[in-house]
Length: 264
Image 1 (cartoon, rainbow, N blue to C red):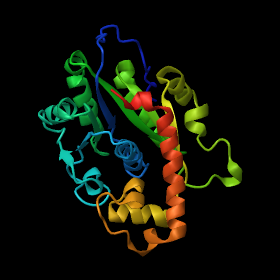
Image 2 (cartoon, rainbow, N blue to C red; image 1 turned 120 degrees about the vertical axis):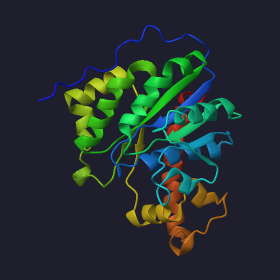
Image 3 (cartoon, one colour; image 1 turned 90 degrees about the horizontal axis):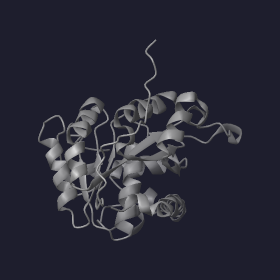
Image 4 (cartoon, rainbow, N blue to C red; image 1 turned 180 degrees about the horizontal axis):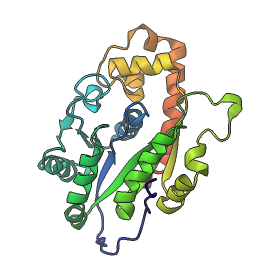
């Protein structure tokens, strides 16, 4: 059996500059764990607070429903399989009025994503860019193993924001719903060494989540309609809007509590 990687060691040569630019990115993992939902929640945070950002979609093969660009019109496309793809992402950070870029990296391009980070980190660090890695854990061991595998290569060159995605209602209010990341040796080591900020994404009614996905709407967009997209009959219902308000409010309250992590 392959030996478990040792993660999060010290990096003595990280530049001690005043870091005034921020790149937020979610690494590629298996689809369906809620990565796009997490990235849209962060995007909503910036939109709701009037903070300008550049959005980058690195999932070139995913052009329709579920891609970052299906939710946002102002998305920059970047193909990280190409060496110049990293330059597109760097420029997005450097050229944004707020010097913030949020990038959704492709679910099937983990190797390319990690190679991109390792290739551009040193120069980006020297230019005052810091990184925030968005990780999504569910109650499955696979999602946690992906986080640990990626953190083993990124190490302490980035900070971590962990979304715990509750994909279904825990039976009997099971306190060990996220047991693999909270109680397994690997998960506990990640939490202890990486010290991620943590956000809980509660279970959402599947009909609402599917309709948001199919219409290319984030919670903020569905509630405040800044892009003028059609809501349809379900998302227009009063009871549905109350549920969405609750989801949105509780998520945004958690993000406001870690606002220092989301600022350059």
